[in-house]
Length: 296
Image (cartoon, rainbow, N blue to C red; front, side):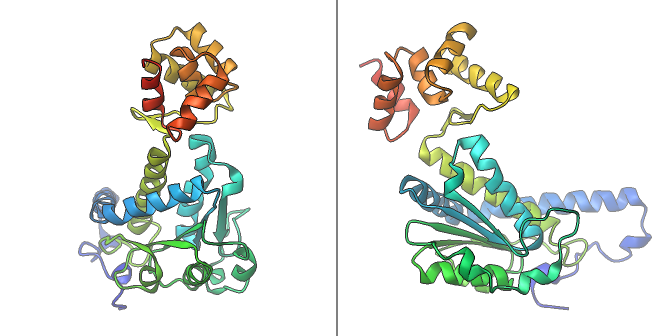
């Protein structure tokens, strides 16, 4: 067996195929839970990476997610949610997945070794940008090559891997080591390793949003209200924070052109959209001090 942690046999794997399915289900659930704890030991690197991502967004830079296989799916899921959840502009997000984003149910494995197209894909990456590379082994050629290219062009690199001392972590400016236990199905890193990766990615992007001022009391105040559910959520956010009625909240949201932060300020007493924007400008987009400014 390989010495890589992600290739080791789980302590409960012996005779797994001969056990009742209910017992196997319990083993799988416990293994996922154990894997989910690994980001707790990486919070320092995750926080540092999140701050780097926030700096990139403020500077007009781009977040590049680079990965292959199941790690690529985890990375893509995080990137694809940032527009609707926190209104991160699409122009500031890129997904680089080995073989391209799947359009069907097949995801060929050989593409993780193909690095030639990265030169073109990362042609414009530079010092204002961040590359988030994700690889369970930490040695995936596609992801490692992307990280190396990004570093040579001055970009900040966040590496997420499940094996200590791996190439990706050695390259990274912010190395997020997720020391997950061996997989119940040896090497099937879509399971425990993937669970830990998703948690780490969600932490990175959410902490970035907190630093950007897009979260207030656990509410996503920079969401893009582009469907019925999110328009209702936007109204509820305005009423919860300001105590306004539904009618006042709806009027504020309309006056703010759908900008939830500005709608909150208008409902709380800002003169108009220009006043709300000016207050946010002076606080770096942070709502709490902008609200306080209404009382001074």
